[in-house]
Length: 230
Image (cartoon, rainbow, N blue to C red; front, top):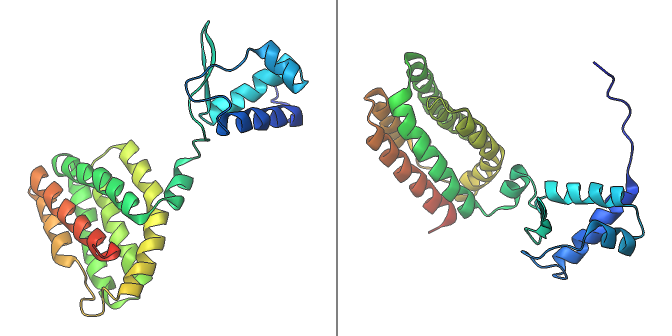
């Protein structure tokens, strides 16, 4: 195997990409429109064609442009896509909960039909840990709650769902710890939501996919409504 070799900085390509991005985000080159050819861009930017190609690759990676064989390079978005984790951190809690519900309800349905004995043992343990955390502080309680939901998603045996839910966890924990304490949701009910979670686990044991999805959808909607005051 040949050595990878040292990294080489490419400041001109970065500057070229930034200049092209400015033209796209300002609307000079609108979404759906075609960029000038490499020769024209190189001349306008005062760089070589290889620098333009490198800049366009970077912009394609950011989701701003797309090269079409034999047709040229077209604008596909007027702002960088950004990574999923960044989008989640910037999103409103209401939007996060809407997508969380879509992901988890389907995961619960799948879990009811795919769960193994080991999965059932895991969700039983997580449910007991959540109940035991009722006497703990809000952070520990939220951690136990998320652990149960994680165990349910894992029982669906879909690695994409696992990865997707894992992206939600840091954002959910941050919001939930803050809002549970702020709204005093556990002041009168330290085991907040236990019956609903027990119902979910019961549905998994009975392999009742529809019931698992229904119980979880109702529980998540009730929590969302309390957190957002709707």
